[in-house]
Amino acid sequence: MSDKHAIGDTKLTEDQSKADPENHVGPDRQAECQGQEGGQEAPQQPTRLYKRRWMIVLLFSSYSLCNSFQWIQYGIINNIFTKFYSVDTFAIDWMSMIYMLTYIPFIFPVAWLLEKKGLRVVALVATALNCTGTWIKVASVRPHLFAVTVLGQFCCSLAQVFILGMPSQIASVWFGTEEVSTACSIGVFGNQLGIAIGFLVPPVLVPNVDDMDELAHHISIMFYITAGVATLLFILVVFVFQERPKLPPTQAQATARSILPEQYSYTASIARLLRNRPFILLIITYGLNVGCFYAVGTLLNRMIIIHYPGEEVTAGRIGLTIVVAGMVGSLICGVWLDRTKTYKQTTLAVYFMSLVGMIVYAATLSLGHLWVVFITAGALGFFMTGYLPLGFEFAVELTYPESEGTSSGLLNCSAQVFGIIFTICQGKIIDRFGTLAGNIFLCVFLLIGTIMTGLIKSDLRRQKANLSAKTTEDPSDCHDWSPAAPSVIKETHF
Image (tube, rainbow, N blue to C red):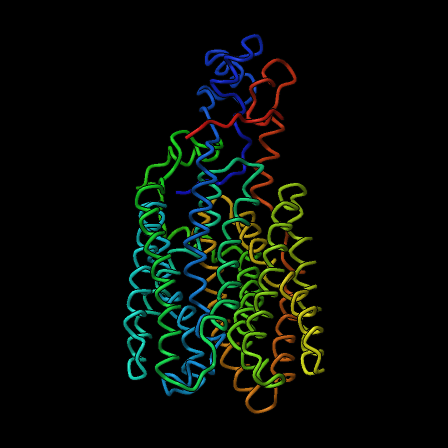
C-alpha cells in the first residue's frame, strides 16, 4: 500500500546527529520519549530526503509530456488529417477520444498493478507502450493506412493509463510532507506541457498543403521526432528510474512499508472509497471540469477554423496559451496548498473561476478579434487546467489512508467518461447550432460542478492525522526529535 504523507517527518538524520551531538537524541532515548508521549514502545524509524527525488519526478514528467503530446497531435490539425486519410472529422476526433476510452476499462487492473508491483514496473510498461506506439505511427504515413495509425494511437493511449495516476504516488513515495503538493504539481506539469507542445508543434511541422507526397513527408517528420524522443525516454527509464528511496521520506511512508502485501485488499479499498460521500462528489465534479477541458482541447481546431478560416497555426497557439496558463496555475496552486492547506476553499474558488472563464471565452470567440480570444483562452486555461493538481491532492485528503493511485485512478476515470460524452455532444451541437451553443452546453455543466463542489464536506483526514501527531508533542527535550518538530530534513545525495 502506498504512503499517506500525513504524519510529520522524523527530522533527525545521521548527518545532523554528527553535526550537533549535544542535541542528538539516541535510539534508546527516542524509545523512552515515545513511551512517555504515546505509550508506544518502538522508536520512530529514520527518514531521509534524497536529491534523486527531483530526477525521478522530472523523468516522469518528461515521458508524461511525450505521451500527452500525442493526445492532441491529430485533433489540432483535424482538417489536415481528414484530407490525408480521406476520413471525416468525427474519425479524427476519435484519435483524441481513444485516450479517454482506453482509460476506462484498463484503469482498475493498472491501479492494481501499481499497488502490487510498484512504480518502476509501471514506468517501464508505460514508456515501452508509448515507444511502440510512436514507431507504429511512423509506419502509417500512407493515405490508405488509417487503421495502422489508429493502432499506434491505441498503444499510446494504453500507455497513458500507466501514467495519469502516478503524480500523487511519486510525491508520496519520494517527497517530504512539505513538498508533496508541489511535487504532484510538477508531475501534472509534464502532462500539461506535452499538451501545450501538441497544440503548438503539429501545425508548424505539418502545413496545409495540397500535394499528398509533400504532406506525407511533413507528417513522417513529426512522427519520427516523436519516436526518437520516446525511445530515448524509454532507455532513461530502464537505467535511471528507481522504485523508491532506501530510507522513506516520511514516517507515514515508513509505516506503509511495514504493511505486508497480503494485508492490503484492493477491492476492499475500492469499496471503502465508493462509500465515501465527499469523495464521490469530488469524482463527479472533477470529471465535469476536466471533461470540459478535454472537449475544448479536442474541438479547438474546429471552433477556431469556423470563425477564422485558414488559421490552423493560430488555433495551435491558442491551445498553447490555454495550457501554458494552466501550467502556471497548477504550480501556483501546488505551492499555495503546501503553505495554506486550504483544499476546499481553493478548489471551490478555482472551479468557480473556471466557470467564469468559460462564459467569457464563449461570449468572445466570435467577435472577430484573435487577440481577445488569446486573452480569454489564457484566463480559461489558468483556472481550468490549474484545477488538475487540486483535484488530486483534495482526493488524497478526503480518502486518507487509502492509496493515492486508486483515488487518482477513479478521478481520471470520471474525467475520461465525461470527456467522451462532452466531446461528442459538443461536436454535434457545434455542427448543428454553432460554437456559442456548444460552449454554453459546457458552461451549464461547469455551473453544476461548482454547486456540487460547494457541497463537498471538507473532511481533511490527512491533515487531521498530522494534527493528531502534533498534539502528542512533549515540551521537554523529547521535542528535539519528535516527528512533528519544526526542524529541516537534511537532503542526502543519490
